[in-house]
Image 1 (tube, rainbow, N blue to C red):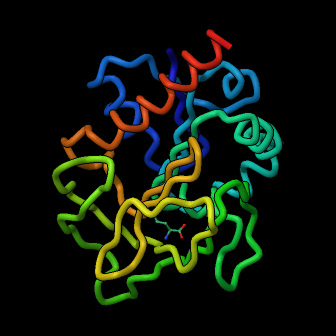
Image 2 (spheres, rainbow, N blue to C red):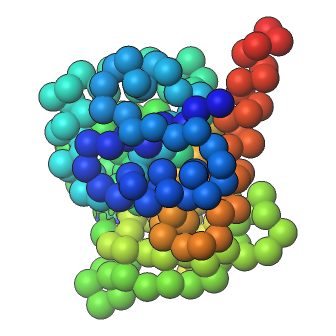
Length: 196
Ligand code: GLN
C-alpha cells in the first residue's frame, strides 16, 4: 500500500514523516501518474488559495476529483479540508468540491488564530491534541457527512465515505492515531478492490 501527500505547497513533509513513522510507503504527489498510483491521498495544510490555483493550473484537480468520486480515500487537514469542501463562505476560490460541507476560513479569528486543545475524535476512545493554525471550521454539513469532532461547539472534523477532513493538524503532533485511522480507510478500500 502506498499513500500520497499532495506536494504542491504546504506542510506535506510533516505528513510524509508521520507515514514513515508508521512504516507506510509514502510518496509526494505532484502529477497525474503519481496521483493514480496511490491507495490514499493526503491534502496538507498550507494556503488553500495557492494550492487551489496550482491544482487548477496543473490539471490535477480534475484527476483528484475523478479519483475521489471513484472512492479513493482522501484526507484533508486545514487548507486541505477547505479544498475538499463544496462551499467556502464568501469565496469563489478553486476547490475540489468533493465533501458536502460549507467551511469558514480563518474562523477562529485573529486573537486566537493559533492554539492547541484536547478534542474528541469520534473514532477514537480518547481525545487527540488539536493543533489549530489559522484554522477553518465547518459551518454546515450535508446529510451524508458524519461529524467526528467539535471544539467549542464548532465542527472541526468530518467524514463522508472515505473522505476525511480535519480543521486541525495531526501531522504536527507525535500522536499518530488520526493518520492510523486514515490508513485503515485506505486498507479497507484496497482490500475491497482486490476482492471485488
Ligand atoms: N488559513 C489557511 C487557508 O485558509 C489555512 C491554514 C492552514 O492550513 N494551517 O488556506
